[in-house]
Length: 319
Image 1 (cartoon, rainbow, N blue to C red):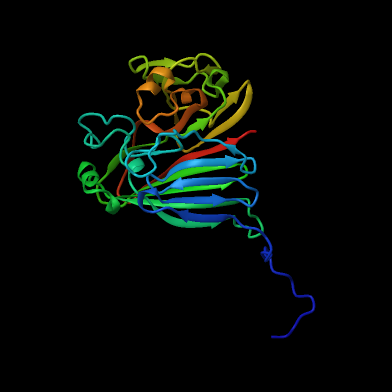
Image 2: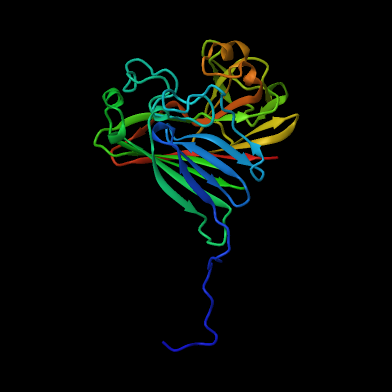
């Protein structure tokens, strides 16, 4: 080939010295976890048991954004109390006379071991500002007990993307069999806050909700701001706007942006419920947490054979 003095340089050619995200796998068995860290210091940790995000640090790695109980089981013996557990295919206690009725509360995804499918970085090789981790759970990997309780062929791919902007978590559900199935999906996010008494939520005004503290009665959020003054367990349905904002002392702390899901659960156990939970420590930890959980839990998503569904969230730390 002839040499050309004006040959164009390669596009997006990575520099040998350019830093890139680091991804490590540590631990064994159910305690295995995947850790990703950006050159700027932000990090995320995902336990393979339940594909549960157990840490997300922003602001150069200085600020932990998720609450995890000091007594949380991280050895695969119980669903993790805290972080971001994945709820599928049923939210809460399963209803009677439904295909999920033989399953435990919140289904099996949060108590199954997932596969780490690999990582991918930003499309631009010079941009090391994000990294995506993919995890998979398939019907063939379920326990015999779970297969018997919910005998459908499915595939789940859970993508956790860490960036300087925030943390994105998206679930892709695929019907790999010949039978139609219904499911619910929820990302049970435990956000860490400084003081629940000074924490409020906006973005839910005018939205109907089911209040589980008040015997599952239906109400409408009349105030533009939700304050937490006691136990709260509300399912807000069909929210018109995509973003719910958590404020501390009146200043925005988190934006929780829903992606192709319509519902949001707001939960805090308060003193009495926290005291009754064996894996909840410290017992006054309810003062430093607020669950804002996006999902599709009012009614059911139906998947025909070969069809798929994808939904999730982007959480932005606003410090």
